[in-house]
Amino acid sequence: MSAPDNIAFHAASPSGGQGFVILLFRPQADGTVRFREWSSADYMAPGREDVMPVDEMNARVAQWARTGWKLTESPIRIEHWLRGR
Image 1 (cartoon, one colour):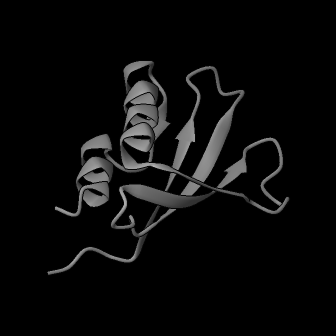
Image 2 (tube, one colour):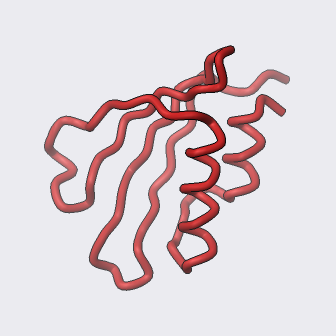
């Protein structure tokens, strides 16, 4: 069974004040991942699009998990998806 072409999750600050909806697109052969991100401050605004190294996105998700952010997807699942496992 192959991984889906994209994965989305919500990350919410433990204080409840800040959050993001993240849509990740299939990682590229060069080790980068394209993503779209919406802030909880304005979900109706167009999402911010960017590209970053897979390792950097994994570190961002791991940091959120370590600091008590609520994630709608397991950080392990996100890492495995990013690594193509």
